[in-house]
Image (cartoon, rainbow, N blue to C red; front, side, top):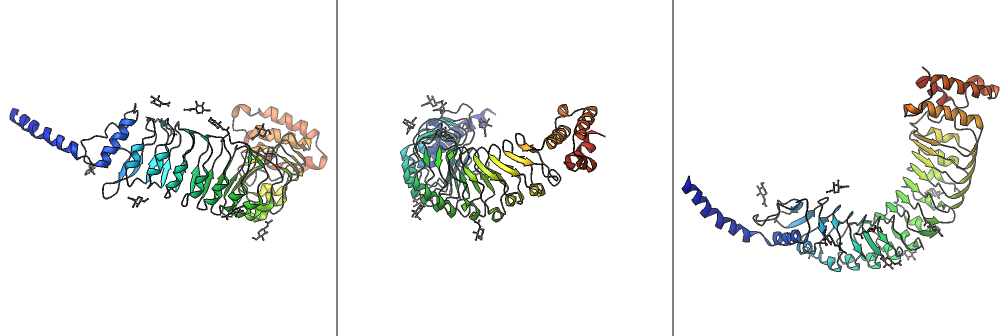
Length: 429
Ligand SMILES: *[C@@H]1O[C@H](CO)[C@@H](O)[C@H](O)[C@H]1NC(C)=O
Ligand SMILES: *[C@@H]1O[C@H](CO)[C@@H](O)[C@H](O)[C@H]1NC(C)=O
Ligand SMILES: *[C@@H]1O[C@H](CO)[C@@H](O)[C@H](O)[C@H]1NC(C)=O
Ligand SMILES: *[C@@H]1O[C@H](CO)[C@@H](O)[C@H](O)[C@H]1NC(C)=O
Ligand SMILES: *[C@@H]1O[C@H](CO)[C@@H](O)[C@H](O)[C@H]1NC(C)=O
Ligand SMILES: *[C@@H]1O[C@H](CO)[C@@H](O)[C@H](O)[C@H]1NC(C)=O
Ligand SMILES: *[C@@H]1O[C@H](CO)[C@@H](O)[C@H](O)[C@H]1NC(C)=O
Ligand SMILES: *[C@@H]1O[C@H](CO)[C@@H](O)[C@H](O)[C@H]1NC(C)=O
Ligand SMILES: *[C@@H]1O[C@H](CO)[C@@H](O)[C@H](O)[C@H]1NC(C)=O
């Protein structure tokens, strides 16, 4: 026994000493990364110099030559400055440090991470300006800097990216303006700059050159002026979100040339004029929101004929009737038209063809007994049992209503039959 122990001691000590010096160069760089970070959760605790390569370490992926191609340390509770030693890894292609507390600026020397295709630094505490030198990494396809404290301008050097498909810098403190140079990145599929305190500025017409763009998310970017006519070039656009800005002018009919549009969000701007005509071209449109603007005129029948999931036009000056056809959509779950000047009654089939979840038509000029029926219907079908009136109360409400109804409507209950029937079935049995 004792001799076995001595034997093991004798051979293992030099052996581990030997392995020590055998950790390859990339492993040694990664240990420098580990040393530079504060790691209170011990996420990197088994990154050890006793291994020959770092290829089995948490977050590390190597290629067949044991060269590190990917570092993924998401949600590892790491803090400290950006670990520049990562850029010594010659084959590093994917780097993700999302949801940590990295609290430095991003160094200009980031260009030395020259083989990166994917860079996710979202949800950290980065400060300072975005380094112009990032654009020297020509291989980059994906950048996500969401939810940091980057400030200043987006460098116009970013226009030099040639393969970039995603640029996401939402929720930062960028306070310059959106540079026209971004219109040169024709490989872009997704441009997301929402929720930044940009200086007031216009939408650069150059963005209309982004013919591969599928997602444009520029909510709350302090934008003013009109939607440029050049946006007719965004022919692949699916999600068009310019909500919460100060955009003016009409909603342009160029949108009808963007036939892939699935979602249009223009709420909380200063758009005026009538809703344009030509909606039948947008066969893929499912969600349209132009609430909180200064729109007037009627709700186009053509818009309501699309199989919409959600239509929000509240807080405008729209008049006329609510088109019957909105009730035909099998997808409609949300219809909010409150605070307009709408007249007449609700579409009689509303709620019959789809599982409507949200309906708000309050503060309009709809006929009064419609609203009473609606109130009762909503109470009856409320998902919260506490809101449901007793059967006696419903009968009383209906009685009052019936007394005030024109005779012909009273006979067949056609004012609002679907909710009327729901009341019958669900709450009055
Ligand atoms: C990784 O670990 C496995 C078993 O845990 C081992 O077979 C393999 O050789 C290790 N690879 C490297 C590169 O260390
Ligand atoms: C972020 O990291 C923390 C701690 O590691 C974790 O608890 C949390 O779930 C993570 N959040 C997300 C959105 O991944
Ligand atoms: C960054 O985080 C580290 C570790 O939590 C802390 O010691 C350091 O003071 C922070 N640096 C800055 C500039 O906030
Ligand atoms: C890294 O990029 C350089 C040029 O940018 C290239 O010459 C080299 O082959 C790349 N290395 C790997 C491992 O991809
Ligand atoms: C980031 O910005 C927010 C909002 O201005 C601020 O409250 C926070 O202290 C900043 N954090 C850092 C690390 O700079
Ligand atoms: C942008 O923010 C930085 C950092 O807070 C500040 O120093 C700079 O003056 C701001 N620039 C503008 C144009 O507001
Ligand atoms: C991009 O768009 C602008 C304005 O819309 C135009 O003047 C410019 O020539 C376009 N650039 C390229 C490279 O197509
Ligand atoms: C719109 O402009 C006004 C002043 O012109 C400003 O107070 C407001 O913050 C702006 N709103 C948005 C969403 O940019
Ligand atoms: C609808 O599409 C057709 C065919 O692409 C096009 O000619 C027409 O101008 C479009 N209508 C509108 C209103 O943009």
